[in-house]
Image (cartoon, rainbow, N blue to C red; front, side, top):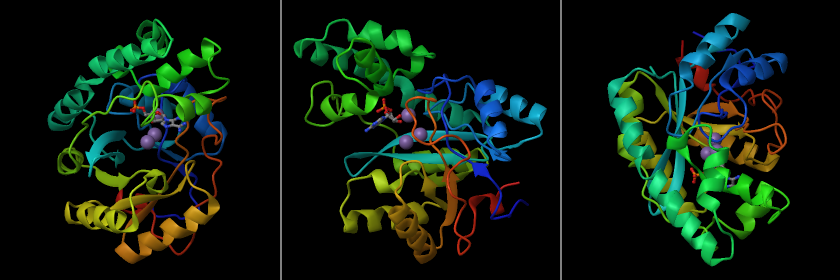
Length: 282
Ligand code: AMP
Ligand code: MN
Ligand code: MN
Ligand code: MN
């Protein structure tokens, strides 16, 4: 049992296997060098980097938890559920993620069609060039292509002007169901965590419904300290964790040394009035 609150745990980041730019081995080294002592690679909808991450962490003497970040559609919006402590060979989880990834290629082609209409040709091929894993072509890869083309100065600007609702390049998509994502994570021996709750644009009542439903489905954790939250949000979601009896998680959501504002392992530690998610993971 690992229950130390002052442990430098980073339980959310991405490699080239999804939309990060570093390999699992480079991430392990970077995390360890930054002081991380409990680490999870949580690629989007994909487990292809798990063995490499786990082997690299072991070689460094860093504890590792199997991880994944599942794209879910709930109440018409995309939310992300992180699974921690999962067995990456679990067939139900592997198959569920395969289905979740399935529509990405078609979605990417539709995104490229819209971008073409907005005067940006060849975006599908351009984005694919940035995708380390062609099964996992994501908006981030389109963002990098648009930056390369000089259309925007950084990926933040791309997301502001393209690829989001009501902008050219946005294609609505149906991801996994919340109950399926939680069932896959549980069947694979893991625990489910609501990723970056501060990023969702639900109203207060919908947020409450999300927390209640997530708990009913056996969800245990919530990200309190994440690269997506402001210090005010650390406090707000710390309170939510206490109110709903959720265990708290901490993760940078690191993708790339230049794009990510927050490096691996450098966020504040969890507040000491919370119980860390790693207290139930061993
Ligand atoms: P997708 O799964 O293809 O919809 O892509 C989602 C990914 O896009 C997220 O995991 C982030 O890495 C990235 N992303 C989404 N919104 C933004 C944003 N506003 N700024 C930068 N990256 C973003
Ligand atoms: Mn991402
Ligand atoms: Mn996410
Ligand atoms: Mn993420």
